[in-house]
Length: 226
Ligand code: ADP
Ligand code: ADP
Image 1 (cartoon, rainbow, N blue to C red):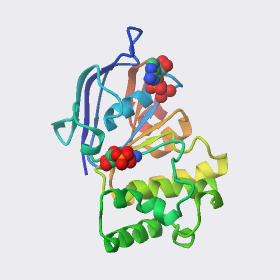
Image 2: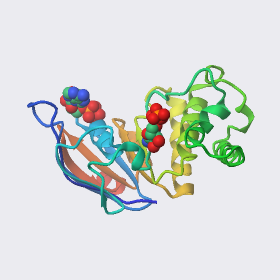
Image 3: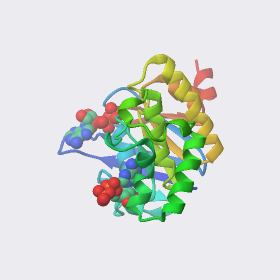
């Protein structure tokens, strides 16, 4: 459970035009926030600054009220799901999901409980002994989410997680992500360039353009605008 506050965040790469320019967004505890906008508008950069994979040029990033600008990613306790799922091809589904727990040196008993719980939630119980190469795109995506949820992270961050899937699977996964997020009640920030995803998934939508925040509203408010 967490709040994420972005206060006047600026990111400059070199001396060019800022990739992110004075963006302020508050994400409430348990909220599903979408960052949407065309390619190059700065949404991935903003997400990476939340996780700590990118330095902040100026402004403040607060998680649960604590300034995290200088905190290493591992100390932020967030969980990021990438576009390319970054699964280990030689490990089984079980071991892929267990991976962060093995790194954290948890006991086998705890690992087993967590992996089985996550795989039930994600409907992967029957595939635990398979390798990623034997799974469909949607199943691989769910394994990546399984790895994210066993971490007990404070928040989920998604970077275009569905962009490599076909339209049908994308629709299914949208429903699943939405259900999972509501069930876990976990604060979520989700980056997409897809309007449909933005309008169906989020509690609120932050619309970005050329590094700036253009609008911040619920899907309904955005929809009802002239
Ligand atoms: P989006 O995720 O909306 O497609 P990005 O956050 O990836 O946008 O990029 C925003 C801007 O920052 C773009 O102009 C991009 O070229 C630039 N940019 C992103 N990453 C880097 C980098 N590592 N070095 C220099 N410029 C970058
Ligand atoms: P190692 O340091 O052994 O290479 P990792 O790079 O996988 O291990 O992870 C180092 C730390 O970075 C982890 O403890 C974790 O907190 C953080 N981390 C790794 N992957 C993610 C992720 N997908 N989302 C958020 N944090 C991560």
